[in-house]
Amino acid sequence: MNSTVNADSPSMVLLGPQRRPGLDKVVAALGLDGPFATITAGWQERESADDELTQHLGGAAVNLRLWERRQDVLDRDPEFAAAWRHRRAVIDEMQELYLLGVGHTVAALDDIRAQGEASDRVRDLAIRDAEEVLRSLDRRHLERVREVHADFYAAVRPHERDLIAGHRAEVAQILGQAQAVVIAGGHVAELLDSQHLFNVVPAGLDRLPIIAWSAGAMALTERVVLFNDNASRGPRSPEIYDDGLGLLRETVVFPSAHQRLHMHDLPRMATMTRRFAPAWCVPLDPGTRVTVDAGGRLEAGTTVIGPAGSVATLGRGDDEGDRDG
Image (cartoon, rainbow, N blue to C red):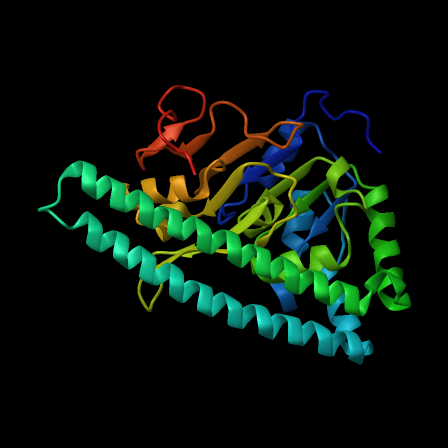
């Protein structure tokens, strides 16, 4: 392991989408020169198409190949595969029904805001009641998703399966030799599922500096939130998807926020910040760089979506206001 890493290096650096990659500059600024463990499971079938990524890391990178390893398990362990597909089908069904409830509640919020004849006080009370309904839906949905995961892992007992145990040992060995971990974006559900299956956090991810962007940053949080106000079928309200890896605390990240959220709709954004409080809502637009301290929390100066729904700076007063969840 290289000994030149800066003593005051942050535990994590979060980046916006890497359409114009700046990873090599971040790595140089942190004093890292490898070896790096890379995670590109979010790219799915293209997981191994990582030549450009490896170049940005000076060639000193080993891909954990988590998506490929999971596919190997699904191909060679039919019992596990059947249970895995059943769990996914149940969660997909739950997600659709939960989203119906969220959509109707958000529509009610829009109707309440449009009630021009109501007094401000009465309208605000009605808005807060509807927001509490949203938080209740989020809370219950996440609890039920956890129950499905718990039943799945209790039934299949992956740690007792030689094939999975072998892959986990190889992943742990690579992480044990790495100086830092780089996690790319892509399909967040695939990325999260692969990392959970191969136990990357206890295997060493929580002890290494991490550089992550887009879905890679989403997976590090405590709660993964899906969103797209500009979906082809119309705005899709932000929705809780699952627990994340829990390394990035009190934070929800929104890659390409100015492209995928109606950031100009301040009441909508203000409701979002109250809904996910006490977590901070962090836009991760192209060119963004966010540093996270050793405790897994955002550093002062981070750009967030403030209580009024507008962009604010953490720790400079404009992030203050009513964020009670």
